[in-house]
Amino acid sequence: MVKIAIVMTALALGFGLMPPAVAAAGDQRQELSAQRRPHVTIYPRHRRLGPNAKRQCRFWLAQEYRVSGTVIVPRQHCWWE
Image 1 (cartoon, rainbow, N blue to C red):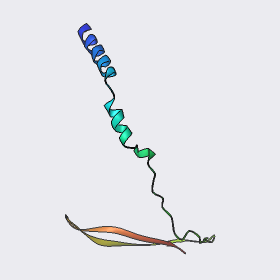
Image 2 (image 1 turned 60 degrees about the vertical axis):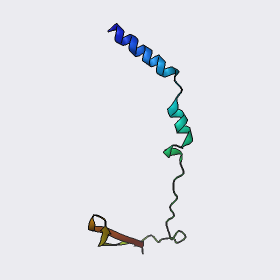
Image 3 (image 1 turned 90 degrees about the vertical axis):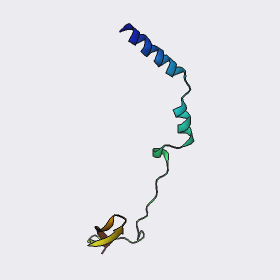
Image 4 (image 1 turned 120 degrees about the vertical axis):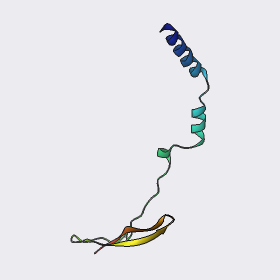
């Protein structure tokens, strides 16, 4: 039991003295949370909707041709009236 404690202490001290290679690699690339996010603009931006405005949507199924074969996927298009 004492031998295990001595070995664990030696390993902890040895790893503590080593230069942090992970920190150096992290400096080269930015963190994902620090990166700028894309800005999405909703059009029409200038048009003011009335108090009774309603969102109209059209839904349909469309075929997509993929490497694994043809698949049916849902599609939609929405607008304000």
